[in-house]
Amino acid sequence: MERKNANRGFKKLRVWEDAASLYVLACKIFSKFPYTLNRVAANSMDAAHSIGRNISEGYCRRSLREYMNFLNYALGSCGESYSCYDSCRQAGRITNEDYEALEQLHYKVENELLRLIVTLQKRAKMGNWEDNFNG
Image (cartoon, rainbow, N blue to C red; front, top):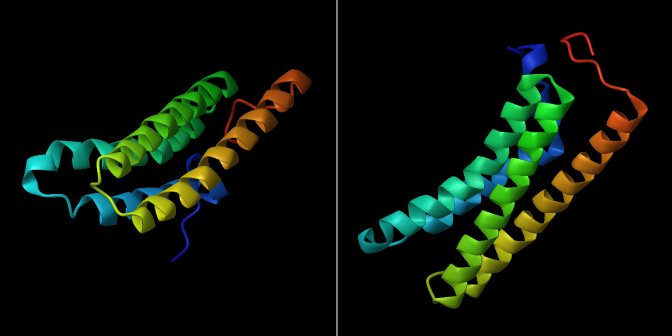
């Protein structure tokens, strides 16, 4: 059954879908960590999860200004996520193969997010944004 809801339009965004995929991949990789690194694993998974959560929360705010703020939070979460998996690679906690899988998907998400921000900045300059559920 297909459900339609104007507040769930973020689900049509490729960057949101890819951010969800990044979270799934992070869970697969970091859930293998030993109990002693449980906190590191949880932080790494949460940083990846935060990207998509911020995209969706900003979208649901319906205000362009708030949306862009949350996209910038998502961009910050991208930085945090990168820092997590890069430092884990340097510490020998994840394999080069796992690092490359995370890096490829993360790079895609980060660039999609940057493009979305630029697009919305252009729309803001043109005044081409409706702060309601009809737009």
